[in-house]
Length: 185
Image 1 (cartoon, rainbow, N blue to C red):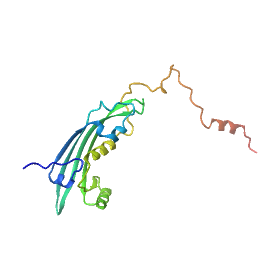
Image 2: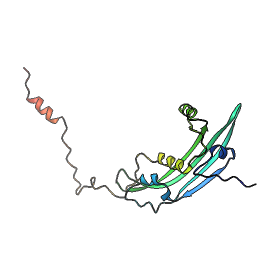
Image 3: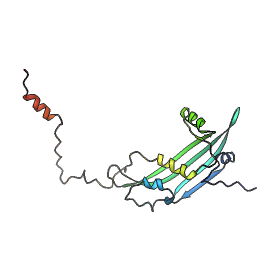
Image 4: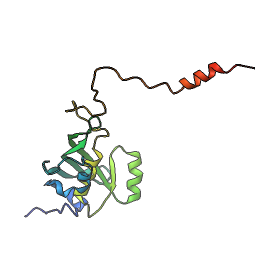
């Protein structure tokens, strides 16, 4: 008997989990437009390796209730982001590893999601796996991308001599001077 084939663009989550199936993907960067938009503008995206992902379904038995439907996702990508120190591209490895519990209906998902540490989604027969992968990779972007050791010093921080720059005046220095001139009545 031939194993059932599942379409990652329209995945029947319930059937996939019940089959305990697994999908693996490796797709070129051109197929991930939102991820590419997040990259540094002046960094070439063509030299980045493809995005790799694995999705595994699980039907987990529950005593006295129907089995739970789970999907387990692992995804990996590299992206060039703008370093917040030197403003040059910094190659960043993104790793996303998440598990999702699927339940019947949006209301049940919202109610369980509020009380659970797990990600709870409404059960669907047409899940777009690449969109889910891209969402999870975007969520794994660092808040402040930076090099461990910047390759160059930003132009603003560079100084032509070793003398320290003069400190700006204190914002209340003018008020202190005025206060000394005013005489109480």
